[in-house]
Length: 224
Image 1 (cartoon, rainbow, N blue to C red):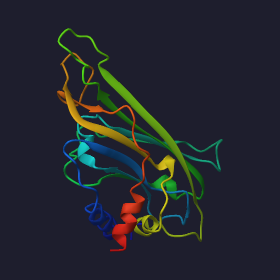
Image 2: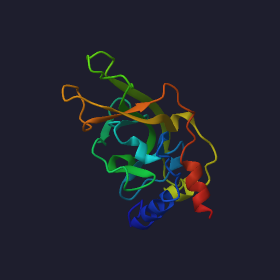
Image 3: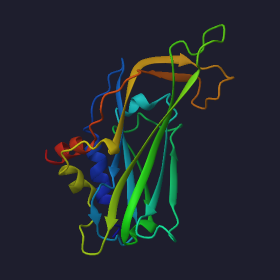
């Protein structure tokens, strides 16, 4: 049996259906690290998942999202290779699920030790007057946020159970998420711009609320 079984994955997917409803006029897009958390886990028999989620995923359209991360074994800094991975989400079907889950499995993470996962979420946005007729304006705006979370793999520790881990979580650690205040306004992007998200770019507000991770919503759903 896989560490993160097909049945467990299906259960998480069903919980995702209970996410927040998107306001077409604009709202908050939240990107969260769902797993791993700052915990100690038993070595998997197969591979370890790294899972992210987009809450109010429809707002991610026209933002050219990318998630990248590295994982290093803190117990072997001299000889351990770094695991590097990225999700290019520019062509994601954001309307297919709510929340939208992004995951990968890594066999190297079944090695015992202390691990540090450093992840970044990147996106592009525009100002309302980015591309006026005369060609002035700032154009595309690059955005990047980076966090780290530590976890351990150790024999005799708790088995990986994503549903149970999120059901018991009542906190909103800052290192686990970012909130993006999407205004609902879009800008037409000229073909000369360095943009691969089609011909439309989203406008975001200059300030965003503090994220409150999806852990709470999963936990509430698991108890229904």
